[in-house]
Image (cartoon, rainbow, N blue to C red; front, side):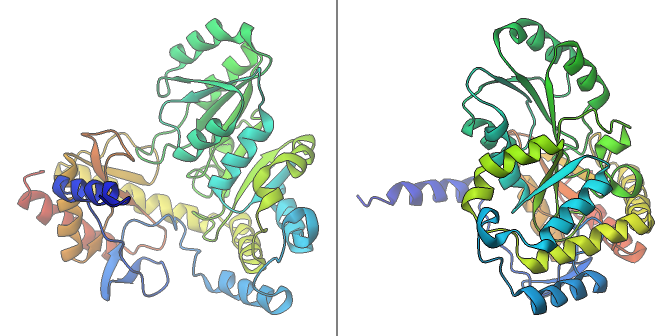
Length: 392
């Protein structure tokens, strides 16, 4: 028996369950209409919420940065990878987020696995929402702190945990997504802040899907709730609505000083490439100049959701442009995705282990770059396939 036979068996099980997939190949820029596997399709599964990933202003900024700084940072930040460009980005993001300081990481995942282990230690407790993102789960596993979960967005359960356990720990860190990426619902940040104050806890919000989407000019979930200065650690991504790559934490200045000494991704991985930094600066400036992109995003999302409800699809209880089309059965979910692709619409199927078994769904990601024609064509495809598969 080969040492790799286990993997052969496991892959065969995926195929039998109808959830095996081959990675699609993109042949042009990630936009509203893409060349996927040499077929032109409407893209309904991108995190490029505002259509900035290939905006001329953003790409021009990236090109200019390459001409001056080259294609790579050449080092970790603590040696010679900390360019003036990166310092400028952090200052701009702090202004944008209306917080004291920002520390940039190579990705949102790196941010979570770097920050959580750096700000907690043995003798502390991490209290995490049960539906938090996988990167938060991985980050808590790297920490020496104890950890527990509370029922999703259940403030009574959160208080029950705090009432029972707070006295046994030095520091308690409450962690939640700002926007939950699989269902599109929002964390109850006002109540979390109240409980954090009542029980003397720190607060940590991963706002990957809120950054660039919620709040004034896309300042995020914290701005949406008017809680500036009330959250201790605000995580954001630069790879979704901003359209580039990277992650960041907005915090007090003293936290930034500590992270630059103890956050492992900053110490042991090369800094963001100059082109990505310059492109991000341009994207953030565009958001600060106008609400044009966020308003278009929400107009598109409102229209699409209304039409899908009218057709009879179950689109959950999303409060954001994320629109889950609930199917349930994993194999049927993947069949639905493949049938839509045949109709010229790409929507990725989401199944276990990304979501619990029996809750498969197509996760539609609306963008400001979608035209009404794009949306109407996608809606017609959903209608046809939904009826063919007896989902509606």
